[in-house]
Image (cartoon, rainbow, N blue to C red):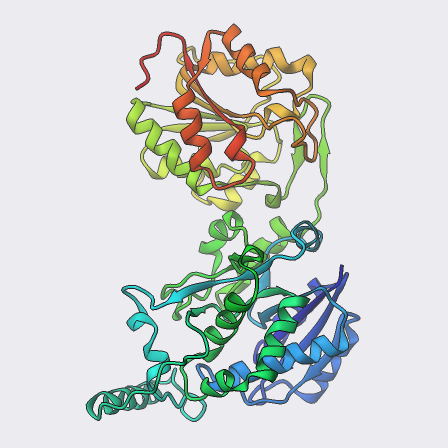
Length: 492
């Protein structure tokens, strides 16, 4: 399946080249360079040296917040549709950076073929952004005034005050009963692109109404597609990592090394925005631990050996439920058996819950330190060997994404270790039969693991098992989590 990548670029030529190099397979790249850009003609011409680049154009003088931004988006989309038979169209900026390997990017859209990825909210926005309608009600001349400069901000504000005093209000667009706003960046199917371009051509009134509307690209695309495309195809997630707060001199944040943990935990394929000098250390870590192909080895005992962070999954909702459970059940301390890069250990420690972790991967401490430079109590230990402990068991043992990888000959030792680590509760994941993925070797029905834990004196807590499953955000966790309690434990 082919992908067309639409890039809006205006600065930082070296970063743009790095971005283009990422799309080396099954991708065709279309670049619009802002007329105000300081790129030289030679630099623009050199972009064609990349095999994936199909067109580089410099048609519009693009202004932040102005109608020109919407014009260039639709122009680049139409151009790509004419020159490419791609099934997907992805709009990104020259200040984006990929955060997952290209094979994962391609596999994701192959698996979710037909889905449309947008970020949108229904207008009015309750309690924020003046409820959103002001964008349509007042004339905003962002194509003629730099609304980001101090002087430009004052002028724009005077325009707004002048409208209010003279009771000037534009009519809210009535082409659609429901209006939407959100991020301009998207990943859409060819069918959605056809609908968007076709509607603009056949019904230009709504498009023309976007003139003098603040940031019309954040309203037009989402409003047309959410109203015109089947709702079951639209996913309210544009797969971009953005921090909507003022950090490093900008809102949204100029991303830096301090945001690496958030990037790793996210489901995004791109992160933005990248601004010098903040992004250099961040992209270095992304290249090393997320984009580099370090390979993976499965040892005979089920241990993974790898140096990449893109192998890990993190469920923020599950982490919150762990914290809630610890507080309600009076859990004093926790051990994470198979802690990976330590994300759940960090989440529990952040909530003042004493926790340690270990993993069989020999690179565990390197990966943990890459995410948490101050360090975490995570060590290397093999769950298939007899573990040496200080004799003081923990209240809760967590074991996620471990047991399905363990060969049956090591199963008894692993279960004995888990039981030996805790005196009260065990939280583990055990995927359903048929839910196999990379490396799974020991998948049996849920009844099997329930029976095995009963042999060790643990029973399944139906109520907490259901609660953990329902609160998880990762789809497979919704059916694969189990909370076991020591027989005789008074669990409310």
